[in-house]
Length: 91
Image 1 (cartoon, rainbow, N blue to C red):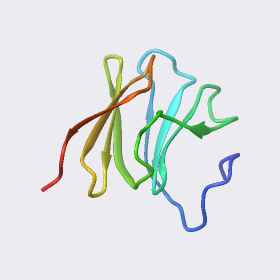
Image 2: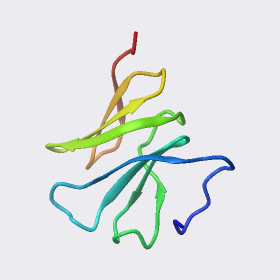
Image 3: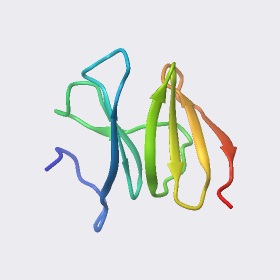
Image 4: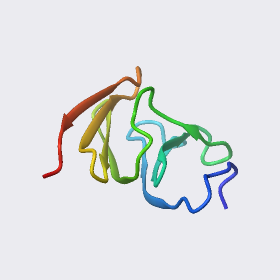
């Protein structure tokens, strides 16, 4: 069990580790992206302005986190300055 409260009926769909900081992990849930910077002891909602939608897959490449959402497209956020950038729509 994770040490934070997910909304009722939420689920974890995907997890990835930061490519440089091995204590930092990201999870994609049915309610958005969460991050821990201390190997899972504490988690918080991540990504200013990222959509609060189901995240099916996340991955880190270079300094960016990519989040593939269910029905809302692909999103990218800078790991150092987490502002969202919308990259496209699922069709």
